[in-house]
Length: 364
Image (tube, rainbow, N blue to C red; front, side, top):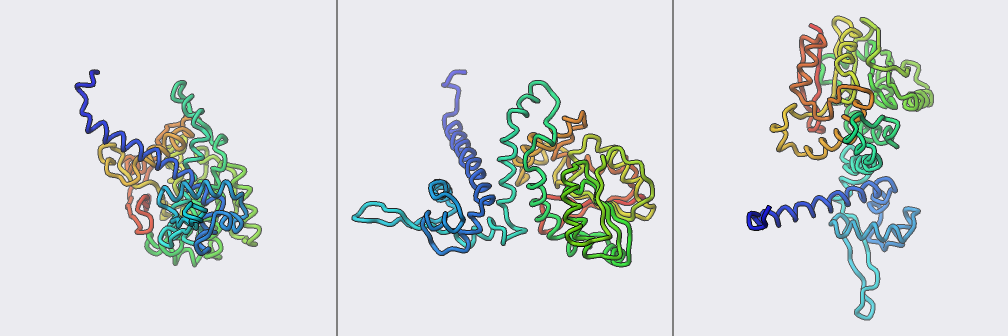
């Protein structure tokens, strides 16, 4: 293409846009490091401090902290006041504004957005494997995702566990009272079991079970439950697509677990069969459309499609699965729920979690 046919203003604007992408991606990785090392938590408790003081308080190497701080300052995340000696720059003080700390520290949970920054590093670690799948097909299995359950536990802790008792469960009319009286509950795709453990502790008259195909996650869940001396919750390693149970549960929950299943249609059918006739299936999943043109203004569209490519879609395809992907969308979800046997489905949202739908499903 001749340069004479190019709109140079559009090209320059797009170049600026790409620079923004590069800076944003780099800062996201640095935010993840700030979260994982505890630097944000430390700085939130300190007055303006030097890099040495910040490093000492966090128990970290000063040279690395100083370079990280430079990224934070140029990214307008941390404020910097330089000191001068004989007219020359000589160190300075760094400060994390409270308005930024309110979105970047563990104390700010469930508003700690730094938790999601960890995804970028996790995806980068499997980039070569994903590229191979681009060329050869197939996918990248769960086993290749280092720290997957660590990251998912933190994320679900903010979107699910923190709001589970007071906001999520009350979406189903009368459910809290039933849980207090005593019912049978399954958390399918439970991971490390934090939601099931919280429900078991809150509702001692009910009986809770967690299924997940990760033996490591189930081992961690069992250890956590044993440590809390809970006798009304148990965890088992099971593949949701091969379950052969009927009329066993009054409530089944899945939290952000269906779209990356290898056989989501079979999983939903199994859930429907496992529910008692008057039972309820509560499904949390991404709030989006199944159609790309309806997601153009989605505030997290690029992030969620990237998440789909780098994790949710590829782990399904690695098992020879459907590869629904993160953005399977409300339209597809409603159709699949109907096909699975749910005749009544209501979709709700909560103010604290605008990125997820909550589907309340019944057989009749």
